[in-house]
Length: 164
Image (cartoon, rainbow, N blue to C red; front, side, top):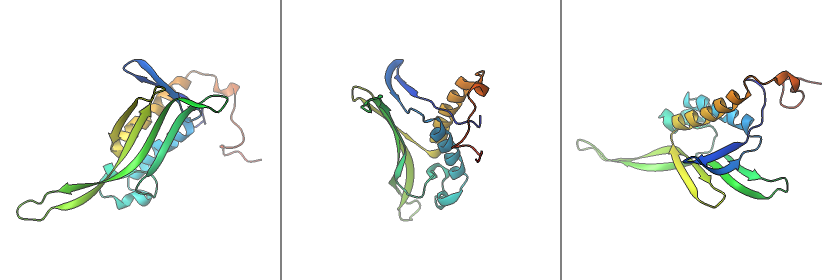
């Protein structure tokens, strides 16, 4: 919607609460969604990767795209975690018709969620799947804002184009 916003993600697994993470993560998720889409189009360092599914934002082949944890007002960590790390994976592609096989590097996003009890889940995503996942989170958050009186709390100062 073009306005910075704060969201907290409520994680559920099979309808059961799994964790609560990511205070004030709306802006970061919106920025990541744009970054993944730009990388898939071959902008920046991502153009080094021939397959658009291997293209992610950032210059490092492996690294963290985000980590969201629950923090209480006393700064104690608990309540779950959601993170996304990039990993470069070598795959052996066998040769055909008398040609030798070769190694091919692929990149994937490992999205991991940890519950308050320490139970973890993992999804391995291509850049297209990560884009769809993050864009879905952003659209859901923005859908929750529709119909709200955003004029009541206008945004001014840091994070806007307004100068003083």
